[in-house]
Image 1 (cartoon, rainbow, N blue to C red):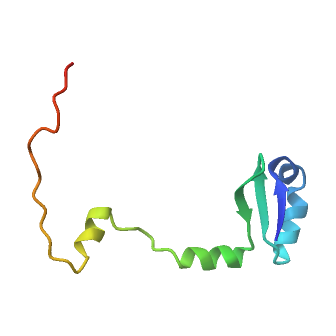
Image 2 (cartoon, helix red, strand yellow):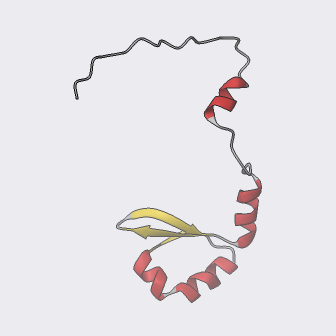
Length: 83
């Protein structure tokens, strides 16, 4: 796995694509921080197949927990606000 900064990636994109086609993974950095990766298409397909197409909302997820707790909402004002 190699790293290349974004300006070099722009300049040498064709060469990077050729390296990736051979199976190499290239990390693209911007200001020293990794911001992207160029990966072979097979790796990308494998990664995307492992992800769910949509994630449940937090509320839906919490409803699936095996705990039978009901929370009552405290409707009292938490503080006075002057506008």
